[in-house]
Image 1: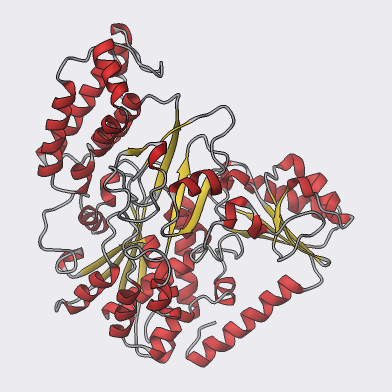
Image 2 (image 1 turned 90 degrees about the vertical axis):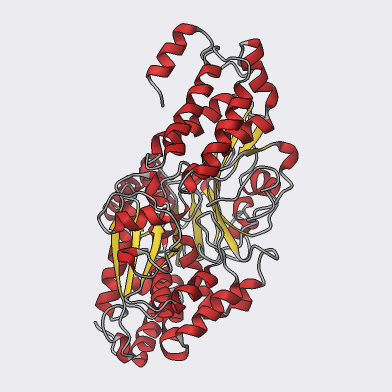
Length: 576
């Protein structure tokens, strides 16, 4: 079916809503299984297969469907069950061995309260509390993840039934490109890739640049350890990201859009490409969209695994099929980007915010968050906490509430030591600094950084020197080698930390780290080198006693570093 007008779209959307309402309020059984990278690692595909086989064997009539990741990775695989006489119940950790018992419960109209995370209702059901009251969800404000784990990510009909593409229709028929840019500026949404530059200002600059053609690019590379928000967003709601890119194209007055996805994110690539295909088939992408005379084309490009390709200019070279290395600036990408033409490049999460801003207005978005950090933020935390996963919180939430509230605090037997912020690009925070908030500015003075929202909680068993060495070694191996300070400075810093770990540290190592780091930070060409030493400097500032013990006492307080010469040879020869 190809839609040729706004009336066609509204008719299609109305039918989609009716089908959705019939599914969610009818007399039949609807069973949804979350399928994403995290759930597949726990065997969710096998759970889905076993469910279908078990239901068939029991001659039990039910619609079995896939949905995306809902963010609660600690609860995978999850199965959501809606029956004729009860609201949807979300069951957690449904591995294949639990499927027979769950199907038996269906047959007898029972629920298994001990397996349930919650019920999608305002009141409890048979001893199961509402899902929104669960500690993991109670403190969240879900805008981008509103449909995550609810819709089938490979169904454009599901997306439209839940309000999708209404912002695209509004822009096409009721707004001008300048008005879209104005709303993004009013919202003051800052880039979610880490730099935090206001998207509206970037879009305005790109629109004013008088050179053609222009390009809109989404950075979905996401090659940093512990950060998985963008791939989960695409896996769960790919049309949301696609709609944001399309609105960016409309605002710039261009028909050329790209999504650059890390090649290792196989499911995200598959689902985004399917979303593009469906949008073309329905007539929401292509030439003369819905009879407006406006054209828009979006393509998917995949990376080869180089972390440096997350840097804007390196990404653009890679997108063009060239070696992914950064270049000097100016010119800025809004003046000369892809194929030396004006290019607006934003992070995936940034684009995912745009449909809501266009639909509800920039002032609606600006009313959320803090004075300088508006809206919500997707956050991931790894480490020995009770619950692992992705959350969406309003900017301004205290880190203490995030860790000890939503994520449940430390697992039994573990004691909090620090929070590594900014992925591999910033320093850690101690327990006495956790009253700082999730935003772009509050952590900076303490040596931390929001970055793209990937944090690591570590406990007392982690050595600050050893952890600093891991972070430094990552940046060393991911350096593209184009500029001398980063190419030579990052391995030099790694070697110093190796000497500390192996009991071979010399007096004056700490001043040497600080001096070398300053050279790398000040003279490196791109953002990787300019922040590469920051985790090491942060660890030195947060845990000076541990560095002193390694240098002056020849011991590792955590007892994890190889402190004899024999172990040193093995460690250096088998680096990371």
